[in-house]
Image 1 (cartoon, rainbow, N blue to C red):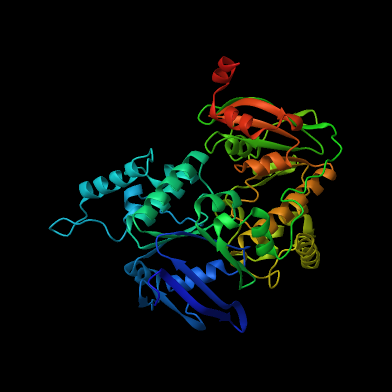
Image 2 (cartoon, rainbow, N blue to C red; image 1 turned 45 degrees about the horizontal axis):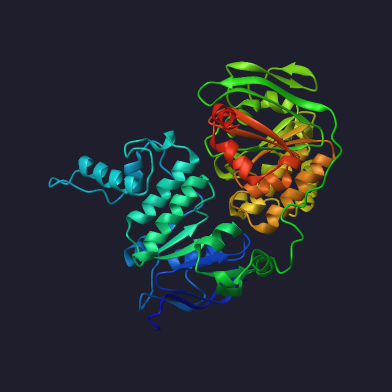
Length: 504
Protein backbone atom coordinates (compact mmCIF):
# COMPACT_ATOMS: atom_id res chain seq x y z
CA UNK A 1 0.00 0.00 0.00
CA UNK A 2 1.30 3.40 -1.01
CA UNK A 3 0.47 5.75 1.90
CA UNK A 4 0.12 8.59 -0.64
CA UNK A 5 -3.33 7.19 -1.46
CA UNK A 6 -6.28 6.97 0.92
CA UNK A 7 -8.23 4.94 -1.68
CA UNK A 8 -7.12 2.43 -4.29
CA UNK A 9 -9.80 0.62 -6.28
CA UNK A 10 -7.68 -1.81 -8.29
CA UNK A 11 -8.79 -3.47 -11.56
CA UNK A 12 -12.50 -3.26 -10.73
CA UNK A 13 -14.82 -5.19 -13.05
CA UNK A 14 -18.56 -5.50 -12.44
CA UNK A 15 -20.96 -7.69 -14.37
CA UNK A 16 -24.76 -7.86 -14.03
CA UNK A 17 -26.54 -10.82 -15.66
CA UNK A 18 -23.71 -11.29 -18.15
CA UNK A 19 -23.49 -7.56 -19.00
CA UNK A 20 -20.21 -5.90 -17.96
CA UNK A 21 -20.77 -2.34 -16.74
CA UNK A 22 -17.25 -1.70 -15.40
CA UNK A 23 -14.17 -2.92 -17.27
CA UNK A 24 -10.90 -3.25 -15.30
CA UNK A 25 -11.16 0.22 -13.74
CA UNK A 26 -8.36 1.40 -11.45
CA UNK A 27 -9.34 4.48 -9.47
CA UNK A 28 -6.80 5.95 -7.06
CA UNK A 29 -7.37 8.97 -4.81
CA UNK A 30 -4.57 10.75 -2.97
CA UNK A 31 -5.09 11.82 0.64
CA UNK A 32 -6.55 15.24 1.36
CA UNK A 33 -7.47 16.20 -2.21
CA UNK A 34 -10.69 16.84 -4.11
CA UNK A 35 -10.94 14.22 -6.85
CA UNK A 36 -13.41 14.95 -9.62
CA UNK A 37 -15.23 11.96 -11.09
CA UNK A 38 -16.90 12.66 -14.43
CA UNK A 39 -18.74 10.77 -17.14
CA UNK A 40 -22.09 10.62 -18.85
CA UNK A 41 -25.04 9.06 -17.07
CA UNK A 42 -24.50 5.33 -17.50
CA UNK A 43 -20.70 5.68 -17.67
CA UNK A 44 -20.26 3.64 -14.48
CA UNK A 45 -19.72 6.36 -11.85
CA UNK A 46 -22.62 5.30 -9.64
CA UNK A 47 -21.73 1.60 -9.91
CA UNK A 48 -18.13 2.33 -8.91
CA UNK A 49 -19.25 4.38 -5.89
CA UNK A 50 -21.82 1.73 -4.87
CA UNK A 51 -19.01 -0.83 -4.88
CA UNK A 52 -17.00 1.48 -2.63
CA UNK A 53 -19.98 1.77 -0.27
CA UNK A 54 -20.64 -1.97 -0.17
CA UNK A 55 -23.93 -1.84 -2.06
CA UNK A 56 -22.41 -4.02 -4.81
CA UNK A 57 -19.60 -6.55 -4.68
CA UNK A 58 -17.05 -6.29 -7.51
CA UNK A 59 -16.92 -9.24 -9.91
CA UNK A 60 -13.16 -8.77 -10.02
CA UNK A 61 -10.67 -6.48 -8.29
CA UNK A 62 -9.92 -5.28 -4.78
CA UNK A 63 -10.14 -2.11 -2.70
CA UNK A 64 -7.63 -0.64 -0.26
CA UNK A 65 -8.84 2.15 2.04
CA UNK A 66 -6.65 4.00 4.51
CA UNK A 67 -4.02 1.29 4.42
CA UNK A 68 -6.37 -1.66 4.92
CA UNK A 69 -8.20 -4.08 2.65
CA UNK A 70 -11.76 -2.75 2.45
CA UNK A 71 -14.48 -5.36 2.83
CA UNK A 72 -17.94 -3.87 3.43
CA UNK A 73 -21.34 -5.24 2.48
CA UNK A 74 -23.59 -2.24 3.18
CA UNK A 75 -23.59 1.54 3.57
CA UNK A 76 -23.55 1.45 7.38
CA UNK A 77 -20.36 -0.61 7.38
CA UNK A 78 -18.80 1.90 4.97
CA UNK A 79 -19.80 4.75 7.32
CA UNK A 80 -18.09 2.99 10.22
CA UNK A 81 -14.93 2.75 8.09
CA UNK A 82 -15.09 6.51 7.44
CA UNK A 83 -16.82 6.72 4.02
CA UNK A 84 -19.97 8.82 3.62
CA UNK A 85 -21.91 10.06 0.60
CA UNK A 86 -24.14 12.97 -0.38
CA UNK A 87 -26.66 11.58 -2.87
CA UNK A 88 -28.06 13.55 -5.80
CA UNK A 89 -31.49 11.98 -5.31
CA UNK A 90 -32.57 13.21 -1.91
CA UNK A 91 -34.63 11.08 0.48
CA UNK A 92 -35.75 13.38 3.30
CA UNK A 93 -38.36 12.31 5.86
CA UNK A 94 -40.81 15.21 5.39
CA UNK A 95 -42.58 15.12 8.77
CA UNK A 96 -39.36 14.99 10.78
CA UNK A 97 -37.23 17.98 11.73
CA UNK A 98 -33.89 18.96 10.23
CA UNK A 99 -32.16 17.70 13.40
CA UNK A 100 -33.95 14.35 13.27
CA UNK A 101 -33.08 13.92 9.58
CA UNK A 102 -29.40 14.65 10.13
CA UNK A 103 -28.90 12.44 13.18
CA UNK A 104 -31.50 9.72 12.56
CA UNK A 105 -30.35 6.47 14.14
CA UNK A 106 -27.53 8.14 16.08
CA UNK A 107 -29.34 10.67 18.27
CA UNK A 108 -27.71 11.63 21.59
CA UNK A 109 -29.39 9.84 24.52
CA UNK A 110 -30.13 10.71 28.14
CA UNK A 111 -29.05 8.46 31.00
CA UNK A 112 -32.48 6.83 30.82
CA UNK A 113 -32.01 5.96 27.15
CA UNK A 114 -34.37 8.57 25.71
CA UNK A 115 -33.43 10.98 22.92
CA UNK A 116 -31.75 14.04 24.43
CA UNK A 117 -33.77 16.64 22.53
CA UNK A 118 -31.81 19.58 23.94
CA UNK A 119 -28.44 18.10 22.99
CA UNK A 120 -29.76 17.08 19.55
CA UNK A 121 -30.89 20.63 18.85
CA UNK A 122 -27.59 22.08 20.12
CA UNK A 123 -25.52 19.74 17.91
CA UNK A 124 -27.62 20.53 14.86
CA UNK A 125 -27.70 24.28 15.48
CA UNK A 126 -23.91 24.31 15.80
CA UNK A 127 -23.58 22.38 12.53
CA UNK A 128 -26.04 24.66 10.68
CA UNK A 129 -24.32 27.78 12.02
CA UNK A 130 -20.94 26.44 10.94
CA UNK A 131 -22.33 25.88 7.44
CA UNK A 132 -23.98 29.34 7.46
CA UNK A 133 -27.46 27.93 6.86
CA UNK A 134 -30.37 30.19 7.77
CA UNK A 135 -32.99 27.70 8.93
CA UNK A 136 -33.42 26.16 12.37
CA UNK A 137 -32.80 22.66 13.70
CA UNK A 138 -36.49 22.16 14.50
CA UNK A 139 -37.79 23.14 11.04
CA UNK A 140 -39.81 20.35 9.42
CA UNK A 141 -38.19 19.07 6.23
CA UNK A 142 -41.43 19.54 4.28
CA UNK A 143 -41.18 23.30 4.93
CA UNK A 144 -37.75 23.62 3.29
CA UNK A 145 -37.04 24.48 -0.33
CA UNK A 146 -35.37 21.85 -2.52
CA UNK A 147 -32.15 23.88 -2.23
CA UNK A 148 -32.24 23.79 1.56
CA UNK A 149 -33.09 20.07 1.57
CA UNK A 150 -29.89 19.58 -0.43
CA UNK A 151 -27.95 21.59 2.14
CA UNK A 152 -29.34 19.32 4.88
CA UNK A 153 -27.99 16.31 2.95
CA UNK A 154 -24.59 18.02 2.81
CA UNK A 155 -24.75 18.79 6.54
CA UNK A 156 -25.66 15.17 7.29
CA UNK A 157 -22.65 13.80 5.39
CA UNK A 158 -20.30 16.25 7.11
CA UNK A 159 -21.72 15.33 10.54
CA UNK A 160 -20.20 11.84 10.27
CA UNK A 161 -16.66 13.32 10.38
CA UNK A 162 -15.71 10.88 7.63
CA UNK A 163 -12.21 10.42 6.20
CA UNK A 164 -13.72 10.32 2.67
CA UNK A 165 -16.89 12.10 1.53
CA UNK A 166 -18.45 11.31 -1.85
CA UNK A 167 -20.46 14.26 -3.20
CA UNK A 168 -22.82 13.29 -6.03
CA UNK A 169 -24.05 16.39 -7.90
CA UNK A 170 -24.09 18.39 -4.63
CA UNK A 171 -24.92 21.70 -6.35
CA UNK A 172 -27.75 20.50 -8.59
CA UNK A 173 -30.41 22.26 -6.51
CA UNK A 174 -28.63 25.08 -4.66
CA UNK A 175 -28.05 28.76 -5.35
CA UNK A 176 -24.81 30.41 -6.47
CA UNK A 177 -24.33 31.81 -2.95
CA UNK A 178 -24.78 28.32 -1.49
CA UNK A 179 -22.34 26.90 -4.06
CA UNK A 180 -19.76 29.43 -2.91
CA UNK A 181 -20.47 28.42 0.69
CA UNK A 182 -20.15 24.71 -0.18
CA UNK A 183 -16.80 25.34 -1.87
CA UNK A 184 -15.64 27.17 1.26
CA UNK A 185 -16.66 24.12 3.32
CA UNK A 186 -14.90 21.74 0.90
CA UNK A 187 -11.67 23.73 1.10
CA UNK A 188 -11.84 23.72 4.89
CA UNK A 189 -12.50 19.97 4.97
CA UNK A 190 -9.50 19.46 2.69
CA UNK A 191 -7.30 21.57 4.97
CA UNK A 192 -8.36 19.32 7.87
CA UNK A 193 -7.30 16.21 5.94
CA UNK A 194 -10.68 15.04 4.62
CA UNK A 195 -10.66 13.62 1.10
CA UNK A 196 -13.52 14.45 -1.29
CA UNK A 197 -14.73 12.60 -4.39
CA UNK A 198 -16.72 15.22 -6.30
CA UNK A 199 -19.14 13.99 -8.98
CA UNK A 200 -20.66 16.64 -11.24
CA UNK A 201 -21.68 17.42 -14.81
CA UNK A 202 -20.92 21.12 -14.31
CA UNK A 203 -17.60 21.73 -16.06
CA UNK A 204 -16.84 25.14 -14.57
CA UNK A 205 -17.45 23.92 -11.02
CA UNK A 206 -15.42 20.77 -11.32
CA UNK A 207 -12.46 22.61 -12.83
CA UNK A 208 -12.64 25.20 -10.04
CA UNK A 209 -12.95 22.98 -6.96
CA UNK A 210 -11.04 19.79 -7.83
CA UNK A 211 -7.32 18.99 -7.73
CA UNK A 212 -7.50 16.00 -10.09
CA UNK A 213 -10.15 14.57 -12.41
CA UNK A 214 -10.87 10.99 -13.48
CA UNK A 215 -13.23 10.33 -16.40
CA UNK A 216 -15.28 7.20 -17.17
CA UNK A 217 -17.02 6.33 -20.43
CA UNK A 218 -19.13 3.21 -21.05
CA UNK A 219 -17.60 1.48 -18.03
CA UNK A 220 -13.97 2.21 -19.01
CA UNK A 221 -11.55 4.70 -17.46
CA UNK A 222 -10.79 7.09 -20.33
CA UNK A 223 -8.72 9.75 -18.67
CA UNK A 224 -7.07 11.19 -15.56
CA UNK A 225 -5.04 14.33 -15.00
CA UNK A 226 -4.47 17.30 -12.74
CA UNK A 227 -7.42 19.68 -13.07
CA UNK A 228 -5.14 22.58 -13.96
CA UNK A 229 -3.99 20.67 -17.04
CA UNK A 230 -7.50 20.15 -18.45
CA UNK A 231 -9.96 22.26 -20.44
CA UNK A 232 -13.72 21.88 -20.85
CA UNK A 233 -13.25 20.72 -24.45
CA UNK A 234 -10.78 18.03 -23.36
CA UNK A 235 -13.16 16.80 -20.65
CA UNK A 236 -16.04 16.58 -23.12
CA UNK A 237 -13.83 14.66 -25.55
CA UNK A 238 -12.95 12.15 -22.81
CA UNK A 239 -16.58 11.84 -21.68
CA UNK A 240 -18.36 11.36 -25.00
CA UNK A 241 -15.57 10.18 -27.29
CA UNK A 242 -16.05 13.03 -29.70
CA UNK A 243 -16.18 16.82 -29.72
CA UNK A 244 -19.53 18.50 -29.29
CA UNK A 245 -19.84 21.44 -31.67
CA UNK A 246 -21.80 23.26 -29.02
CA UNK A 247 -23.42 22.55 -25.70
CA UNK A 248 -26.23 24.81 -26.86
CA UNK A 249 -27.14 24.02 -30.50
CA UNK A 250 -29.33 27.11 -30.75
CA UNK A 251 -31.29 27.66 -33.93
CA UNK A 252 -33.45 30.69 -34.57
CA UNK A 253 -37.06 29.95 -35.48
CA UNK A 254 -39.42 32.42 -37.16
CA UNK A 255 -41.15 34.41 -34.40
CA UNK A 256 -44.93 34.35 -34.77
CA UNK A 257 -47.99 35.59 -32.93
CA UNK A 258 -48.24 36.05 -29.16
CA UNK A 259 -49.58 32.72 -27.96
CA UNK A 260 -49.41 33.28 -24.18
CA UNK A 261 -49.90 36.59 -22.38
CA UNK A 262 -49.86 37.05 -18.62
CA UNK A 263 -50.96 40.27 -16.89
CA UNK A 264 -50.28 41.15 -13.24
CA UNK A 265 -50.35 37.57 -11.97
CA UNK A 266 -50.15 37.62 -8.17
CA UNK A 267 -49.88 35.03 -5.42
CA UNK A 268 -48.62 37.15 -2.50
CA UNK A 269 -46.75 34.33 -0.76
CA UNK A 270 -44.56 33.73 -3.84
CA UNK A 271 -44.85 36.50 -6.47
CA UNK A 272 -46.71 39.69 -7.39
CA UNK A 273 -47.67 41.63 -10.53
CA UNK A 274 -45.96 39.29 -12.96
CA UNK A 275 -46.54 40.24 -16.61
CA UNK A 276 -44.94 38.70 -19.68
CA UNK A 277 -45.71 37.24 -23.10
CA UNK A 278 -44.38 34.46 -25.28
CA UNK A 279 -44.61 34.17 -29.09
CA UNK A 280 -44.74 31.14 -31.32
CA UNK A 281 -41.20 30.03 -32.16
CA UNK A 282 -39.64 31.62 -29.08
CA UNK A 283 -37.61 30.11 -26.29
CA UNK A 284 -38.10 32.51 -23.39
CA UNK A 285 -35.80 32.07 -20.42
CA UNK A 286 -36.66 32.80 -16.80
CA UNK A 287 -33.55 33.63 -14.78
CA UNK A 288 -33.14 34.34 -11.09
CA UNK A 289 -31.78 32.88 -7.91
CA UNK A 290 -33.38 29.77 -6.44
CA UNK A 291 -36.39 31.01 -4.44
CA UNK A 292 -37.07 34.00 -6.74
CA UNK A 293 -40.52 32.63 -7.58
CA UNK A 294 -39.90 31.49 -11.16
CA UNK A 295 -41.12 27.93 -10.68
CA UNK A 296 -44.11 29.10 -8.65
CA UNK A 297 -45.25 31.45 -11.45
CA UNK A 298 -45.07 28.70 -14.04
CA UNK A 299 -46.67 26.08 -11.78
CA UNK A 300 -49.54 28.54 -11.32
CA UNK A 301 -49.92 28.78 -15.09
CA UNK A 302 -50.14 24.99 -15.11
CA UNK A 303 -52.86 24.95 -12.44
CA UNK A 304 -50.81 23.50 -9.59
CA UNK A 305 -51.74 26.54 -7.45
CA UNK A 306 -54.30 29.32 -7.86
CA UNK A 307 -53.35 32.95 -8.39
CA UNK A 308 -55.08 35.54 -6.20
CA UNK A 309 -55.31 37.99 -9.10
CA UNK A 310 -54.17 38.56 -12.65
CA UNK A 311 -55.18 37.46 -16.14
CA UNK A 312 -53.94 34.78 -18.52
CA UNK A 313 -54.60 34.84 -22.28
CA UNK A 314 -54.05 32.01 -24.75
CA UNK A 315 -54.13 33.08 -28.42
CA UNK A 316 -55.82 36.34 -27.37
CA UNK A 317 -58.60 34.72 -25.34
CA UNK A 318 -58.70 34.95 -21.55
CA UNK A 319 -58.59 31.53 -19.91
CA UNK A 320 -59.16 30.30 -16.37
CA UNK A 321 -56.88 27.48 -15.27
CA UNK A 322 -57.98 25.72 -12.09
CA UNK A 323 -55.99 22.51 -12.39
CA UNK A 324 -53.42 20.80 -14.65
CA UNK A 325 -56.12 19.24 -16.81
CA UNK A 326 -57.40 22.73 -17.62
CA UNK A 327 -53.85 23.71 -18.58
CA UNK A 328 -53.47 20.66 -20.81
CA UNK A 329 -56.85 21.39 -22.43
CA UNK A 330 -55.61 24.91 -23.20
CA UNK A 331 -52.42 23.59 -24.77
CA UNK A 332 -49.96 24.08 -21.89
CA UNK A 333 -47.47 21.39 -20.81
CA UNK A 334 -45.05 21.38 -17.87
CA UNK A 335 -41.77 19.49 -17.49
CA UNK A 336 -41.23 19.77 -13.72
CA UNK A 337 -37.91 20.55 -12.02
CA UNK A 338 -37.98 17.41 -9.86
CA UNK A 339 -38.37 14.44 -12.18
CA UNK A 340 -38.33 11.92 -9.31
CA UNK A 341 -40.87 13.59 -7.02
CA UNK A 342 -43.34 15.10 -9.49
CA UNK A 343 -42.38 13.98 -13.00
CA UNK A 344 -41.85 10.26 -13.38
CA UNK A 345 -44.28 7.54 -12.33
CA UNK A 346 -41.43 5.52 -10.83
CA UNK A 347 -43.22 2.17 -10.38
CA UNK A 348 -44.30 2.17 -14.05
CA UNK A 349 -42.54 1.38 -17.31
CA UNK A 350 -41.20 3.70 -19.98
CA UNK A 351 -44.30 3.27 -22.13
CA UNK A 352 -46.73 4.18 -19.35
CA UNK A 353 -44.65 7.22 -18.42
CA UNK A 354 -44.72 8.50 -21.99
CA UNK A 355 -48.42 7.86 -22.59
CA UNK A 356 -50.05 8.42 -19.17
CA UNK A 357 -51.32 12.04 -19.53
CA UNK A 358 -52.65 11.44 -23.06
CA UNK A 359 -54.10 7.96 -22.71
CA UNK A 360 -57.58 9.28 -23.64
CA UNK A 361 -56.26 9.97 -27.14
CA UNK A 362 -55.80 6.25 -27.62
CA UNK A 363 -59.29 5.13 -26.68
CA UNK A 364 -61.09 2.79 -29.04
CA UNK A 365 -64.73 2.61 -27.90
CA UNK A 366 -64.45 2.03 -24.12
CA UNK A 367 -61.01 0.40 -24.35
CA UNK A 368 -57.61 1.79 -25.20
CA UNK A 369 -55.89 0.84 -28.44
CA UNK A 370 -52.82 -0.99 -27.13
CA UNK A 371 -51.29 -1.28 -30.60
CA UNK A 372 -51.41 2.47 -31.20
CA UNK A 373 -49.98 3.13 -27.73
CA UNK A 374 -47.11 0.73 -28.42
CA UNK A 375 -46.40 2.35 -31.79
CA UNK A 376 -46.47 5.89 -30.41
CA UNK A 377 -44.25 5.06 -27.42
CA UNK A 378 -41.75 3.26 -29.67
CA UNK A 379 -41.75 6.22 -32.07
CA UNK A 380 -40.91 8.63 -29.24
CA UNK A 381 -38.31 6.27 -27.79
CA UNK A 382 -36.48 6.31 -31.14
CA UNK A 383 -37.15 10.01 -31.72
CA UNK A 384 -35.42 11.02 -28.48
CA UNK A 385 -32.87 8.22 -28.34
CA UNK A 386 -34.16 6.91 -24.99
CA UNK A 387 -31.82 4.13 -23.88
CA UNK A 388 -33.95 1.40 -22.31
CA UNK A 389 -33.94 -2.36 -22.66
CA UNK A 390 -37.62 -2.21 -23.65
CA UNK A 391 -40.70 -0.03 -23.32
CA UNK A 392 -41.68 -2.17 -20.32
CA UNK A 393 -38.49 -1.41 -18.37
CA UNK A 394 -39.36 0.46 -15.18
CA UNK A 395 -38.34 4.08 -15.56
CA UNK A 396 -36.69 4.10 -12.12
CA UNK A 397 -33.86 2.00 -13.60
CA UNK A 398 -33.07 4.50 -16.38
CA UNK A 399 -30.29 7.08 -16.06
CA UNK A 400 -31.33 10.63 -15.20
CA UNK A 401 -30.85 11.78 -18.79
CA UNK A 402 -33.06 9.02 -20.17
CA UNK A 403 -35.74 9.67 -17.56
CA UNK A 404 -35.74 13.30 -18.63
CA UNK A 405 -36.02 12.32 -22.30
CA UNK A 406 -39.04 10.17 -21.46
CA UNK A 407 -40.70 13.18 -19.83
CA UNK A 408 -39.97 15.30 -22.93
CA UNK A 409 -41.49 12.47 -25.02
CA UNK A 410 -44.64 12.68 -22.88
CA UNK A 411 -45.22 16.24 -24.05
CA UNK A 412 -44.33 15.49 -27.66
CA UNK A 413 -47.25 13.04 -27.65
CA UNK A 414 -49.48 15.64 -26.02
CA UNK A 415 -48.37 18.27 -28.57
CA UNK A 416 -48.94 21.44 -26.49
CA UNK A 417 -48.73 24.95 -27.92
CA UNK A 418 -46.84 26.17 -24.85
CA UNK A 419 -44.23 23.96 -23.19
CA UNK A 420 -42.82 25.01 -19.82
CA UNK A 421 -39.51 23.31 -18.98
CA UNK A 422 -38.27 23.82 -15.41
CA UNK A 423 -34.54 23.05 -15.01
CA UNK A 424 -34.72 20.71 -18.05
CA UNK A 425 -31.11 19.48 -17.85
CA UNK A 426 -30.51 19.36 -14.08
CA UNK A 427 -28.26 16.44 -13.13
CA UNK A 428 -27.86 14.97 -16.61
CA UNK A 429 -24.73 14.50 -18.70
CA UNK A 430 -23.40 16.77 -21.43
CA UNK A 431 -24.56 14.58 -24.29
CA UNK A 432 -28.13 14.29 -22.97
CA UNK A 433 -28.13 18.05 -22.36
CA UNK A 434 -27.20 18.76 -25.96
CA UNK A 435 -29.91 16.37 -27.20
CA UNK A 436 -32.61 18.04 -25.08
CA UNK A 437 -31.44 21.49 -26.18
CA UNK A 438 -31.66 20.36 -29.80
CA UNK A 439 -35.18 19.03 -29.25
CA UNK A 440 -36.32 22.31 -27.69
CA UNK A 441 -35.03 24.18 -30.76
CA UNK A 442 -36.90 21.73 -33.02
CA UNK A 443 -40.12 22.39 -31.10
CA UNK A 444 -39.63 26.15 -31.43
CA UNK A 445 -39.14 25.67 -35.18
CA UNK A 446 -42.48 23.84 -35.24
CA UNK A 447 -44.12 26.98 -33.86
CA UNK A 448 -44.28 25.97 -30.21
CA UNK A 449 -43.70 28.55 -27.49
CA UNK A 450 -41.07 27.37 -24.98
CA UNK A 451 -40.63 28.81 -21.48
CA UNK A 452 -37.44 27.64 -19.82
CA UNK A 453 -36.44 28.07 -16.18
CA UNK A 454 -32.75 27.43 -15.60
CA UNK A 455 -30.33 28.20 -12.79
CA UNK A 456 -27.39 27.52 -15.12
CA UNK A 457 -26.41 30.85 -16.61
CA UNK A 458 -24.71 29.45 -19.76
CA UNK A 459 -27.88 27.45 -20.50
CA UNK A 460 -30.35 30.31 -20.15
CA UNK A 461 -28.08 32.63 -22.18
CA UNK A 462 -27.25 30.00 -24.80
CA UNK A 463 -30.82 28.84 -25.45
CA UNK A 464 -33.09 31.87 -25.00
CA UNK A 465 -34.40 34.41 -27.49
CA UNK A 466 -35.46 36.67 -24.61
CA UNK A 467 -34.91 36.43 -20.85
CA UNK A 468 -37.15 37.61 -18.02
CA UNK A 469 -35.36 38.05 -14.69
CA UNK A 470 -37.00 37.67 -11.29
CA UNK A 471 -35.93 38.67 -7.78
CA UNK A 472 -37.85 37.71 -4.64
CA UNK A 473 -41.20 37.38 -6.38
CA UNK A 474 -41.02 40.37 -8.69
CA UNK A 475 -40.04 40.78 -12.31
CA UNK A 476 -36.96 42.98 -12.39
CA UNK A 477 -36.34 43.11 -16.11
CA UNK A 478 -36.48 41.72 -19.63
CA UNK A 479 -33.52 41.33 -21.98
CA UNK A 480 -33.45 40.66 -25.70
CA UNK A 481 -30.69 38.43 -27.08
CA UNK A 482 -28.41 41.29 -28.11
CA UNK A 483 -28.57 42.57 -24.50
CA UNK A 484 -27.61 39.28 -22.83
CA UNK A 485 -24.83 39.64 -20.30
CA UNK A 486 -24.04 37.32 -17.42
CA UNK A 487 -23.04 40.27 -15.23
CA UNK A 488 -26.29 42.14 -15.99
CA UNK A 489 -28.47 39.09 -15.36
CA UNK A 490 -26.76 38.41 -12.01
CA UNK A 491 -27.25 42.06 -11.03
CA UNK A 492 -30.95 42.02 -11.98
CA UNK A 493 -31.45 38.71 -10.18
CA UNK A 494 -29.76 39.98 -7.01
CA UNK A 495 -31.46 43.37 -6.59
CA UNK A 496 -35.06 44.54 -6.34
CA UNK A 497 -36.59 46.73 -9.02
CA UNK A 498 -36.37 49.71 -6.67
CA UNK A 499 -32.68 49.07 -6.00
CA UNK A 500 -32.01 48.74 -9.74
CA UNK A 501 -33.81 52.02 -10.41
CA UNK A 502 -31.79 53.74 -7.66
CA UNK A 503 -28.58 52.54 -9.30
CA UNK A 504 -29.34 54.06 -12.67
